[in-house]
Length: 152
Image (cartoon, rainbow, N blue to C red; front, side, top):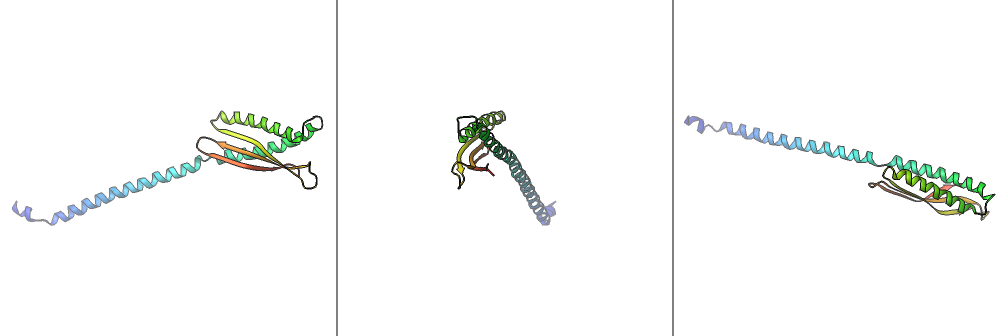
């Protein structure tokens, strides 16, 4: 029994085994952190509402163009100017759009900012500047101004 106490050659094997076990635990923890970080980073990119914003911008451009065309027609039988009619139609669009997006927990606001007139004829509207804001609680987007060419 005395000879086993004096034989220390097995201590190096135990010590190296303990060091290797600790290193494996550290490496496994680091790999786990890398996987979790990659998951959350890619998930955050998927949660960005770029399709909602793109759809809002496209629909607003189309509606602004159509509102201008309708305003030109209504102006022929009305006392209001094209600017007043277009602004009124965009306000109605904004009201309906806000209601639809609010039912999904998002805030949207579309407002007419400015009218740009042609160089040759001071009464000819060339483009309409529209301010668009989008907020879903996480992402805030603002396009000020979104320029819509209407008289082409």
